[in-house]
Image (cartoon, rainbow, N blue to C red):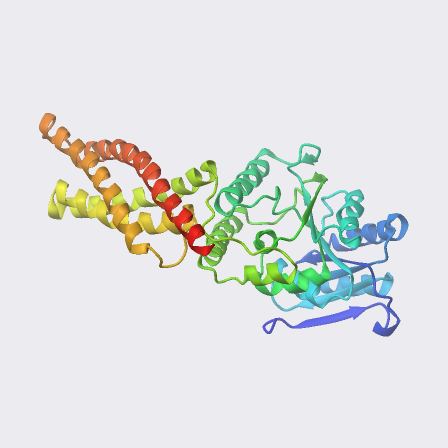
Length: 413
C-alpha cells in the first residue's frame, strides 16, 4: 500500500533462499518479551514435524519497543526466518502487505502467542497445497474443538459470529480465530478488495471469499486463551460493527465486483433478488424494525408537544414508513435498482395505512377511556400497537417483494 513503508530482512541473501511452499506470517506489535520463545518454538515445529518447506515472516506493526530488534536477531539466528517492518499499526495491513508480496504457494498466519495447537497447521494447509480448497480457517466453535477461555470471550465470540450469519449471511463458523491460510494466487485476487487494515480484516476477507465462491475449509482446533491479551474488546467490537455495516452496504449497492471475480474463477454469477429464508428475513426485518421504531419514537416525542398526539403519530409513522420500506426492500428482501421502486413505496404506504389505523385507533381508545394519560403511557400503547402492525407489515412486504422477485426472474428469462 502507498501509505506503508516496508523493509525486508532475511538471514540469507534473497537469491540463495529456496521458494517455500508455505509462508507463515506472525504479525506482532510490542511483543519483545514473547516473540523469541514463540518463534523458536514455531521454527522447531516446522523443521521437525512439517512435511512442506516453510518460511516464517515476522511482520512488525510499527512496534515502539524492542520488538523489531528481537525480530532481526531471530532472522540472523534461524534459517528461513525473515522480518517485514511496517510504519503503521494494524494486523490487517501487515497481512495484506506480506501476503500480496509472498512468493510461496500458500500464505498463512497465526497469532504470536501460539494459542492454537500447532498440530492443526498441517490439516489447515494441506487442502490448499493439494488445490482442493482456496482458503482455510481454524475454528474454535466446532463441537470437536477443545477451547480454554473465559465465559466473557466465549459469549462475545459466539454473538459476533451470530451477527455475521444474520446480517451478512456468512456460513463460516469462526471469523476471528488467529489461524488462517490461503492460496497465494487467490489472495492476490481478493486482497485488493479488502479495505480494513485492523481486526475486521479477517471477517471482511472471509465474507468476500464466500460471496466470490471460494471454497473455505474449516479445521477444528485446540485453543488456549492468552490471559495477557491486550486487545481492547469494546473498541474492537465498535469497529467490527462499523465494518459489518460498511461491507453490507457495499454488497447491497453492487459496488464490489463480485460477479467479475466469480467469472474469473469459473463460478456462476450471483442472481439479484433471490430472497433469504424465512428466518433470515425475520432477523433482518427485525434489525430494520428496531431502527425504525427508535426513529419513530424519537420523532413522536419531538413532534407531540408541537402538533398534538394524532398529527405527531401520523408524521412520525409516515417518515419512518418510507425509510423502512426502502431499507427492507434492499436489506431484507434483496431487491436492487430503481425498477418498481415507486410501486413498492406505494404498496408500502398502503401497509403503512394499516399500521396507522392500528396506532391511531389505539390512541383514540386510550384518550377516550383515559383522557389524562401521561406521555409514557401513550408510548407504551403505541409500542404494543406497533408490534402488531409490524407483524402485519412483515407479511405484507414479504408478499410485495416476493412478487417483485418473481417478476424480475420472469423478465430475465
